[in-house]
Image 1: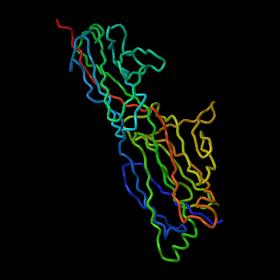
Image 2 (image 1 turned 45 degrees about the vertical axis):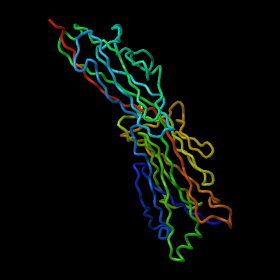
Image 3 (image 1 turned 90 degrees about the horizontal axis):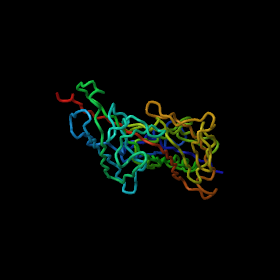
Image 4 (image 1 turned 120 degrees about the vertical axis):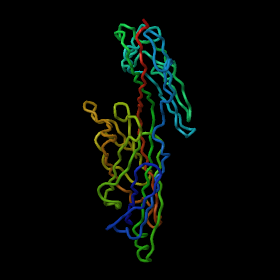
Amino acid sequence: MRSLIIVASLALVLISAGCVSQLTDVFGSDVIDISRIDQSPGLNDLVSLESARFLPEKNAYPEQEIRFFANIVSHETDPGVTLDGVYFEVYDATQFKNEDGTVLCNSDVDPRGITTCQADVCTFGKMCDLSAGETQTLDIKLRAPLSRELANVRTPISLNYRVRYHHTSISNYNVVVVSRDEILRLQQEGKKLSQTVYHVSNAGPIQLVFEETAGGAFGTPERTMFLSIKAINLGNGAPVGNKLTSLKVTLPPGLGVIEDAPDGFVFNGNELIFTGGDPSDPEELKLIKQETIPYQIKIKVDSGALGLSGSEAPLRTFLLSAETTYEYELRGSSSIEILPEPA
């Protein structure tokens, strides 16, 4: 059986850029040139809160009805992608009440702590979907605090609010397999093999990053190939709870098998899936300082990755795929001043 050599491309999933692998002291590095092009829409924040304003705009009197307006804007450009599970809430509004003045906005109305002062669309109980480029306008009716609650003193009050939505981030990672015979031929003929591979990711605040670890860029069927994957937050908000909901890595048919699973992961055919592990002491996909820890992936390359013996291809490119799901949150704040009652 002919030996195989793995040339794995290394990428950081960012705005489109190109890089060339620098392989030294590895058999074949003198004749193999792998150029990588990373492609991403460069769009990290898929949702924004815009045009937040009060009516009246700057100040109001005690017990006056106040309306708060804001736009939830989808910045997704792919017409085939819809952002789902979108909802908005005012999670802190000191002494403000609902429209009829009977309940404080800070009063929780369900186990998740959702407050009472909500718009009539895109609420926790009535989440909305946003298609590419769509805008949803929010209109929240509030009642200003009583004069005695502010001791009849001119008082600025902030409304703190947030918008949440669900998203799936996807990253594809190229692995090039080159035969030993092809490397020897190139060396004997004094030629080089130049190959361009592409790393593609979709838009979103969380990006998945593949990296090479122990063993360098090459491997053989007798040597395990070590990769790692981690998630990085590039958006202006954060995943809810600073953790991801799921993470899955899929190997293409014919490349090989995953030899070992990191803590919290299990095998499922050609997939490595995060399950949390022991239910009594589960692992979490937590982000610390905007990123998760790197999770190591051990791949044993299939001896037939280039085809049957005697008819092998000189090289083949395989595409690994990874995806993660999460709920993402962006926050904002707006202030209005409550004036003393007129004398």
